Image (cartoon, rainbow, N blue to C red; front, side):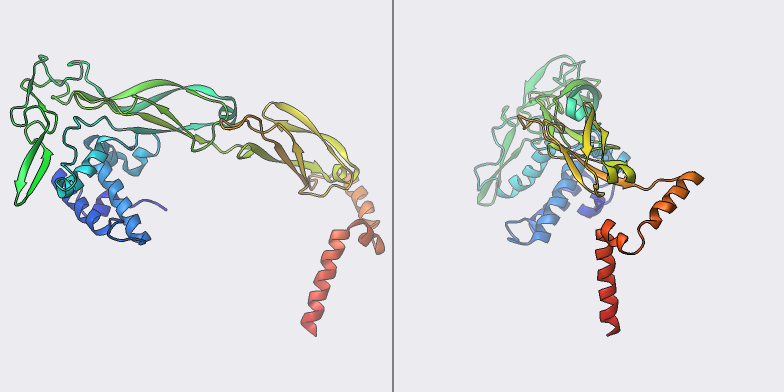
Amino acid sequence: MSKRDYYEVLGVGRSASAEELKKAYRRLAMKHHPDRNPGDAKAEAAFKEAKEAYEVLSDANRRRMYDQHGHAAFEHGMGGGGGGAAYGDVGDIFGDIFGSIFGGGRGGRGPMRGADLRYVLDIDLEEAVAGIERTIEVPTLVGCKSCGGSGSEDGEIDTCATCGGIGQVRMQRGIFSVQQPCPTCAGRGKVIKNPCRRCHGNGRVEEDKVLEIKIPAGVDTGDRIRLAGEGEAGPPGAPAGDLYVEMRVREHSIFQRDGDDLYCEVPIRFSQAALGAVIAVPTLEGRAEIRIPAETQTGKMFRLRGKGVKSVRSSAAGDLMCKVVVETPVNLTAEQRRMLEEFEATFAGEHARRHSPKSSTFFDGVKSIWERMRS
């Protein structure tokens, strides 16, 4: 099922401000939150949909990518993950409501770490089984080299006079005392008088990060590799997030994988099926042979032990399952056609029942059905 447009989910226009996005999400979150709708699967799905939309649109970098490429921006390349800046924004919404009840929300935690990123890597089955090394390019935010990630052009950073360097201020609302990020320093606890000209005081810039990664042997679709600290750079004073590289194994022309086992279909001639034969079959390690007994029927499965996959979670390789499929000959010569016609003539009368038991049983069943319909 295709995803709905994130702006449509939140019920806002594409030019909505950060405050409008926050209000729209807050309204939907309070309406559909699972705690308010216990056991309501539709409400839970609506809550998750709104949460996902806000996590993307509340982050300026991800919103820019979404506006340019839609949902495809996160299918192959950068995507949000747990612990990132967008999740902090979601927490802030509930912190505004419940902050005083639970002791002040995020107070004293310092700058939030950079967002975790997700990168989907397409690989071939052979690469997944053997393991490979790959170079990937990840669009992300990296520390500004001009200012060393500090955000300051001259390196001078002062303690915020409003919050005293804590990054949080308390606001009195009636009988409640609510703690929220300092409006002067945006929760950093520091202020920059002379912002860096390259990053404009953010300490981070957009860049394609090039990484060399090693894929272990035996990975499968959905397996993830965590690269600590290779995610989005955090704001000044905060650590970077992590990068999760998720495997997606391409469809193979011969083999299908099911856990540690591989499956394939092996075509054989009907003369080989009738008389028996030794045939060559492919494996991921080269050729192997299987012995086809006489009178083998199509669909018969043969097992080659240890010729499957040794996954990252297994100590032994799986098996290769070969299903033989009897292939009807084509482009017959006149001589081949004549010989087949003579061969077919030998199945007349009682010989058909003797040599083709399945076919005879099938047609006996059909006759029985017709007789019941006429009676």
